[in-house]
Image (cartoon, rainbow, N blue to C red):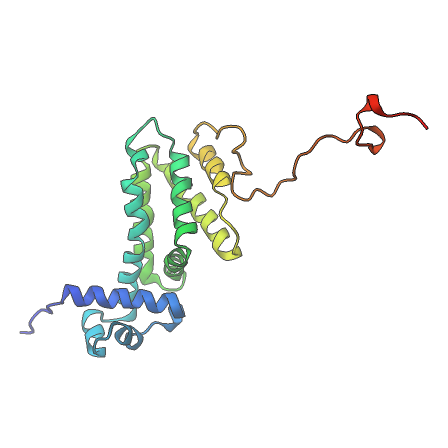
Length: 220
């Protein structure tokens, strides 16, 4: 009778971390048991022992990549305070995610979107959505929680795919609409306070285009 496998948790975690580094540098197509083993500095047989297939390794990598945002979300004090605005809290978390560590966010979304082509990853992607929705549902209803997640995903993807800057004010206002919270204070709306692209306001031009006040103009 075959003995059950005894995985080494530390080595397994080391291989997963190595896989994440490989994907960050080379993308999904650059990951293999061989490249993960080389990155982790372990024998090739060690990766195939702990992960029978590449999909199994990607599942573990995606699950670990998704842990960061969920952990920050669960620890955020606004979720436990009904008087605190949820929209500002979520917009601020996205700022940390996109402005503070964009490379890590790109890695997470690359693995997340890999589920489009790799069905084995879809349950993990669904787990992440369900976990975040469960946390947000403490402050709103489940359907609204899912709508907020869809909005956050859309904003993140637009920023990552276009290389643009994250507009926290815009995210805050749109999330407030979805969550049915009070809108942001005047002057901090959709244009936000991060690189708003609206036209600059100045004094209205006087009649005839003169910069002189009307009382000081003389007719020629």
